[in-house]
Length: 318
Image 1: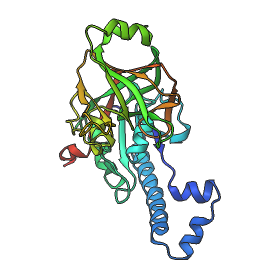
Image 2: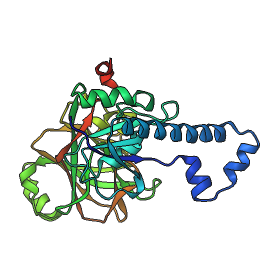
Image 3: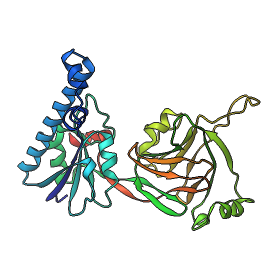
């Protein structure tokens, strides 16, 4: 792979955000008391700084031009041959939102404290990873991403990991109708038209619950798995959905389990019966509000993400 120009997207440590950015002195007081959690946050901050220095030295040693940007300031990744996320999976997921055909390499900046399931390795391994990438000896694999529409309009950009649809307040009950339909059936149709169209061919779930998880294979190890979903191979193109904490009236022994998979030509359709719901994409930062009667549709039609080999592919580095 030819690599001339790289964008490095980095996270800010919790210590940096609390102390240096927000001026919160509570963490400093905790450190002076010998608080072990606060000390771990400071140690993680130092580790992140050392990882950034190692990465910059490795790129400079190979005469690769690079630009570093905080993950909260990314607006475009155009003009780069490679994007490197320096952090954990959260940083990689935020970075992936801005990527089209440019490959993404995840480097776990602090493997002791950070989950790096999607990362190719750590800063200590960056020399090996870059050399393998330059010599085309490490795989770059496409990862399925989701497209989300509200009333037919695309929102939130491509989603790599998962979606959560729920009320804005976590204590409130989510109410919605849910079904799976062929992709072509719902184009430019409102809730009434969709219900009429599907009245003889589709079965609708009338759901009261704490929300709905929808995940790609990449996201199948995250929230949906904790809620009882299945872990899938990362090469799978299926989307998985699961109603979480489905409500059962007192007259029933237990709630129906609503869990399934979407095939390539299918769309998951949700009609909101909530006044103040949200769809969250790949964590808490990207969200869109959904009102009563609006139609949310999810399918696998977003362009895939090109991800440089992950921890599961570590044999490529030997």
